[in-house]
Picture 1 (cartoon, rainbow, N blue to C red):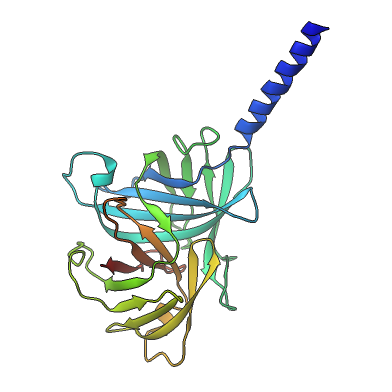
Picture 2 (cartoon, rainbow, N blue to C red):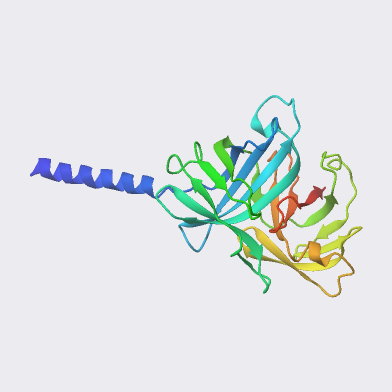
Length: 270
């Protein structure tokens, strides 16, 4: 009787641990990927958040970081000088270790929805609960483009933030030369109003979080110019380098769902 009871307890324990391992799914965090399209120390960063409503679904950002070369040391010192492209996705489970990555867009009603005209990409894990060894087959919205294969190993130090009020500067200098400047051309208030006074965008916008860490913008009154560069975009805040707790500078990225290379890049100013 004792042996039978002991065997039953061990079997239940083993079943529990197998179930727990099987439920690990896709981890949250920021992960490092390599791609044949990259050069030198550049990296693809995949930032993942769980869907608070559906435990088997996730939201993700996929961004290319152009890094300053010849900087030795830990990953956190690999400074990104630019983000030449960025994508927004909703992930859904399609197999034990596979996820469909569906591109997102701003809907006609001002929400965030899956883009029905864009092909899904596929993320295949090598092992449950980790991105190490995972392979992303990224399919492009443009017809005839060869899928990009992104292999993941290790992490990046970036963090995906919620709304960050403060002063910002929209930069178009892909060398990162504006990082240390003090100029501002955008202010973000605590009540989630974006006031933009740029050369090609002038006006105020109300921001609303429509998915975890993803914001859409609607005109607040009359927008003098450049509304099309804001209301069609998905806004996200990323602390790209992340030197917390010593220092932090967040970036606001405005994602163009129709052109991942058309990134609105904003530096936070302290």
